[in-house]
Image 1 (cartoon, rainbow, N blue to C red):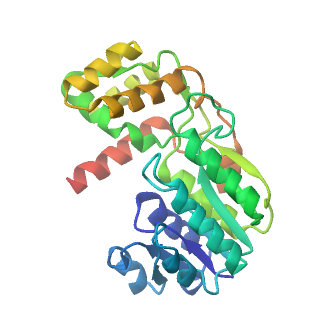
Image 2 (image 1 turned 135 degrees about the vertical axis):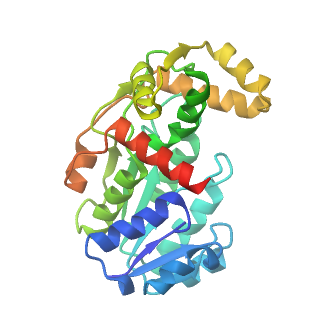
Length: 292
């Protein structure tokens, strides 16, 4: 069995490759792909086949899929501009006759109203169904690492400001989600299923502030903003109006409960509890400081 991982140069893709190896996949059974293979040269040195795969260049997709049985399609990183690239991979997977396509989608992608990230994922899920490719949809909740900038700012200001209100987030770390994807890729069941994945526990922003305080060693408070105040604050520090509205829209979705459903499914897939918020933040902050 040969497993192809798209976007292997990205933060999630690299972790999926590591998780596959840790779960017993042989290097020769893995194909790691990226738009620029120089960015994954170290994987080649580990005996893993690497290949160019650019979502926007169908000829690279077809070539990379040669001899591949299972594909992990990691969603593109540009909301609003990634659907056609996803469709290119789906069409190539169908043409190649892959036995399974696993796609990293978003929470409640087909039912969440007003969620800025949902549209691309909903359309991609629909494209997978229309193509008839055997598939598993993994709807990943928020990455705990998304909050590293908030914790970094809190180290200076003592404040985490958000318009998420009393909304809750069932986050897990990238490593947790990567291990879940690897587990699904290596299993022989689950085809046809759409799986909502999350951390074991949902937390609110007061708890995020408390976790940040524990990590950085100073008091941190949560400042509740209205959507209008949030947009104005972002624009005041140079964020363009469109991006400010997008970010505030994410917080609005959190306030309305889109990310608040915790489930044991991810922990069951990976065979261990998901990483607690404070531990995930501490590790992510340490990595960020090392990389700086």
